[in-house]
Amino acid sequence: MRRFILLFCVFVSALLSHSANAQFPITVKDDRNKLVTINSAPNKVAAVSVFGADLLNALGMQAAGISTLNHQRSPYLGDQTQHMVDLGEIHETNLEVLTALKPDLTIGLRTYTEPFASKFEEIGPFLAYDLVTKADSDRAIRSATKALGKPAQGVELNQSFNTQLKRYASEPLKPQSVVFLWHWSDVPYAFFDHHFTVQMMHTLNAKNGVGTSPQPNLKKFDSAPISMESLLKLNPDVIISFKGEPGPFKSHPVWQQLKAVKNGRAYRVADHYVMPHGPIARSLILQELAHLFHPDKFSAPTTLIKEARATTMQFGEL
Image 1 (tube, rainbow, N blue to C red):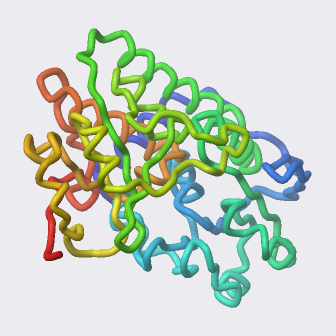
Image 2 (image 1 turned 45 degrees about the vertical axis):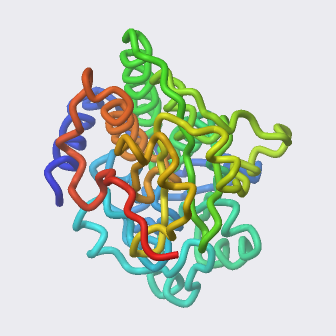
């Protein structure tokens, strides 16, 4: 297990040593508004999304199985994910593998599991969460730690992150303009203000050029396609981009006209930026963004492994 995860878990264990575990059976409500009863402390947990695996690590535990994104396991959690059973793509869980795993609890994303919820419930206790905003992250952490018999730890994890946010927000930071993109095939999508990673950017005095969603009543509508011409019109100071497929970004004449690209401030990031809701992910993202936006004030996080660090965007052939 990588050094940063060990250090994080040691810190959390020390911080929460006073907390007593809850008694089972425990009934919790997930984001389906469904009451789920867990009869005994889960020892084998499946994570259909990285959130569950992240949370378990923050508690000094380890998921038994984990889903993948673009057939890759999240690099920020380190080598430990190689010891977890591969449950298949996040949007298409291999239910045969999950059944064979026989988890005591499955923690998943509602978006990807809803069509097969009855199948998940047949396998064992199942919790599904809507994860878009910071409030979603806090709520899911409270709910899932309760299901794991560690409700006080969930409260403390949220309090610790809020303290971290306040510390950054109290700094006199130079305003920045930013656009956060994810690339599906050759189409860039831009995230709106309510996505959790963008909310963290706001804490660092970075303004999202795309702004608020045109349909604020639809929380899951967290991003939309953006044309290269629109991106050029915004011309942000910083560009943050996630691309699931390996290899460079597809070239386009606009890229080289953008201020962020000219100044070497267009960055490729790993998948925890689009799935930032676990306690480890959100802390690491906040630290790295602080460095990317304000390198004169904040150092790069040394606890983030090389494979998960932001790198300068590279462009391929047209």
